[in-house]
Length: 71
Image 1 (cartoon, rainbow, N blue to C red):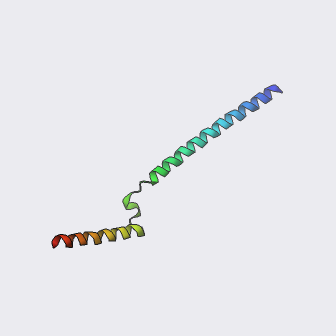
Image 2 (cartoon, one colour):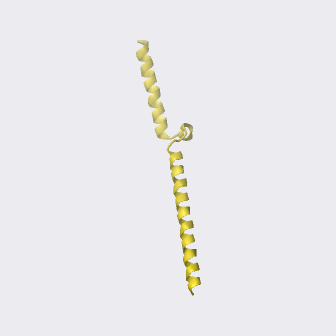
Image 3 (cartoon, rainbow, N blue to C red):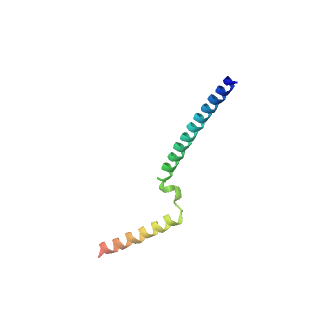
């Protein structure tokens, strides 16, 4: 009876260690995915409305600066 209890305790211990390892591994992979998303490629969302608005504002600003320099 004692050997069964010891083997069950060891199995539970190894299972908990394996689950802990998987949890840490998943946490690190999720963290690396977040870091990759924080630095998007400019061309990735080129047709996004905010990018289009920013591009239009930059064009207007360049035209304004060009007119100012021509005067």
